[in-house]
Length: 112
Image 1 (cartoon, one colour):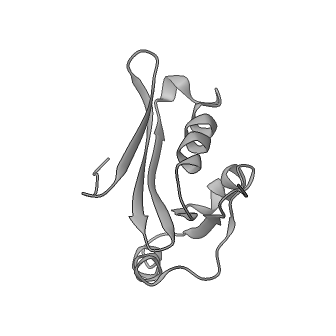
Image 2: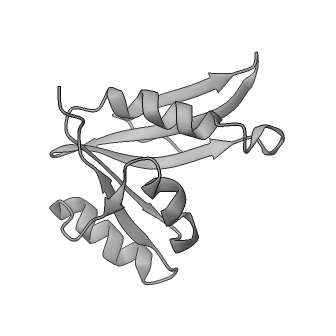
Image 3: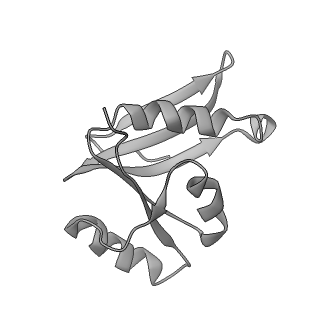
């Protein structure tokens, strides 16, 4: 996973790193640019737990782009289709989706 300069990395260990995600700051929140779980640790709730903990740290919305097959996974974790992305993300989405099927999703911050 390539990490942008301003990004926050979150990892799960057991004791070695078994999962990770990357959050990049954007206007109005963060962009989830990667969520990876080691094959031997999948389907154990690790991605959900890591995503939940990381999302708690975000002040604002949390956006991501994913393959349409993953939309249900993210919907069960509070994400919904995003009809309007912030400018820089909208540009990236247009560029990335030219070459592969993608959906843009957003998770609004939990009330505090």
